[in-house]
Length: 640
Image 1: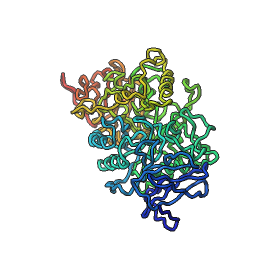
Image 2: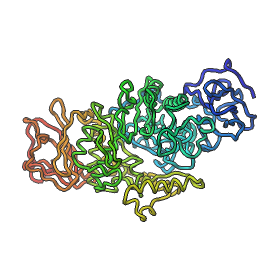
Image 3: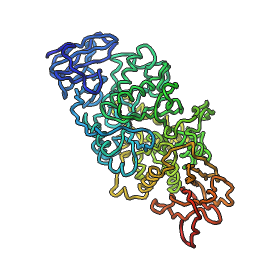
């Protein structure tokens, strides 16, 4: 086996990675950060161990002439057992197996004309690759991209794919941060998926977990004790060390990881999981640094960064120069929670502080968050931060996502917990709101399959602990804490739990009323010049009744839009002493869309605005456009 020094090193591949195994013209260079170690060896299959040279800051590196792409390798630290590379590009046998030497230049991209994405105008669609199709692979998911394009979504948000233990997992237990999970396909599979999406004009975001490591298959402690810290609380294990002793190289590890996904997989951005658990007191927060670096490596393409923030930190989407994190958008759980209560009437656990009232829904459309520093009874402390002039596109709204569907005994989707009419109306609120909407996979199908919490720690002591932890978590809901409900909770380690969570695409699903409803609303959102402007400062709202509201979208030329939502019983709003309902002096309201249209499974949509006044049917939504002139009076029996 031949080794060489720096003089024999060729230029690194365009991925920009220096850690891990880097394929060069005449061999492979290995580098690992292991400040805890005295010696680190590379162990190739059927070859003697090759010692790496210790360098500054705890790094070890070396060049092996006989190594090549397609070989597997491990590291041996201080003469111990062999373990995988923490920066492995692929783990063909899972997190406990050997690492694969991958040459990223082997994949031939076809997306050279792709310019990237910006948050304005996007419609997100959240996908779990393993449950999205029967096969549960990237290649199988490609077969559904044309339908997603026709649906009208624009940006796919892929739940975490970093290598995890077992055969199925939500992805938030990842341990090999640079390696796409082998259960979803080979080392080029994710690239094929992104490439195929770009050919169809679809962007791809990846959900990444920078707040903890998974509990099984994590070998980082063999290399360094400085990756994690006990100085901050973390409900999923130890917090990541971003600001303590040794944190400079830990920060580099995660920054490199974020840049790696963008550069090597041509991703259009990242969704950052649970940012409230990413603790950093540095002058520039780690997320701010990631935002800056990712945008640099993506140039000339543009990328989108989305944060999940349970604490609703508006600094997430403020510029780094102003003390923010420089992200493009942040999830709004407030919208989901208020709509969930409006749909079901249930106010348990973290839904306690919501009424689902018309005023809450209006405030959300105008202000993004409901809680901006008020006391939050459920947490017994203030929650949220003040929203000022941040754009509507910076708030991600949703009726369903992986957490909120999965955080129940049966993993039921929202449309199965409320009436069809109320669901259609709330969907209209979501897709016509100025904020950025997100759909959860299967939502457009009216999927009846649940989305349950699943992991695979069978035969591992962690499995029973996770199962019990799931029961404890759900017991915060009084109804889920009953003995009967606890008994009904499925074991996340059981294969049937995962299999039940898979989507089933019935033949002809694109012709169903619910799919048509999503398509038409997204077309309206895309093509209507007023709705598509996403101007939350150009809307006003009024409460029309205990369960009804009006939202008026203002247009410079006076051609306003008017959205009416009624989640309760028939509303006879006569007289109508609400100025937002008044047309211009020389105009009238023309009905252009209704959730009661029979094409969507509705009962029929006669115009609710009559000569006598407003008669809004129960559980319905309506959209009007201001027209100039005098409205034609419908003949008896004629619908508007």
